[in-house]
Image (cartoon, rainbow, N blue to C red):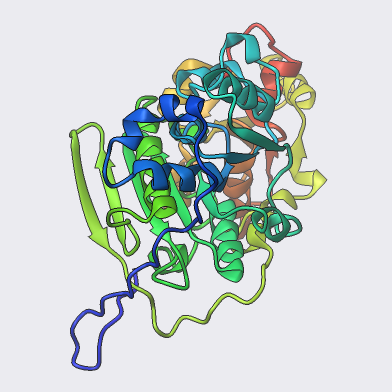
Length: 403
């Protein structure tokens, strides 16, 4: 993390954020007065603050673990316009934490499911759906229609994209992140303080940080982090309190504790002028280019395993997931060697170079990263399972569970 110092060597204080982000709307209706009465009697919010919320346009990225509580509380608070970006469908495994969706929504687009839940909670909110994948081609156009961005993305490429698009447009955004028992929340606004690039100047190596779908997440953590994100959004909109701009709040759910760290602008960092290829920046794009000669399908692997069982073929099937994933579902005959041990160089002795090796993970991302590392280490007889164990269950053993 970069720190900014004054000429005498003391830490510089970032300039204060401006006042309320949004101008107030017209007078509240009698229905709105009753609905938001608990806000109206708080002096710091009052009628004026509630009118600002009514006039606010907030874009939420992701209707998943963080987006679920964020959307519900933004709607309950009376934010007049809510945009939702998500191109995914509701899956049964989402319901452990994504409380905006229900069993009846499984298979539906998350944007539509979230819209219906918001309408049931507060029909006064105008919900705008963006059932697309956020990328460099559409971010600026989408962000331009909103006053504030709430980033609940679950991958580094999208986080850097959100940061840069918001910086170019001069917009603030609230960021949150979760993993297992840990959560982080901050506010970034290039015109008035640090950005995500000051907190994380460089993306971690591809595959080195597992996603929630790979490493797991404590479901209730989403509520704690998501609600704090909404708290920061409402404070920015109404201009009350002290925002988390220049600070990162860290929550340890397992230990039941909050703490914070400070982050400052890097005075030598160039200002963001244009969007880039964020998959390449995060080292993701090359992994997809492993080459067909280094990829096997689920049906091909099933044939290979049958041949191995009959003594006609010899190869090693290596599962690079974590032990918890291995316990949920596995391919019979696979050996567990987690990705982290391989990428750290601790497991090469367990992987002979004179034997064919097939790596696999949940969906193919981690196994592709391991494949690239193996080839760089001189392994030639290596490949990986396209689509991972999800493809295996779908095409070969549909009776096995997925997660």
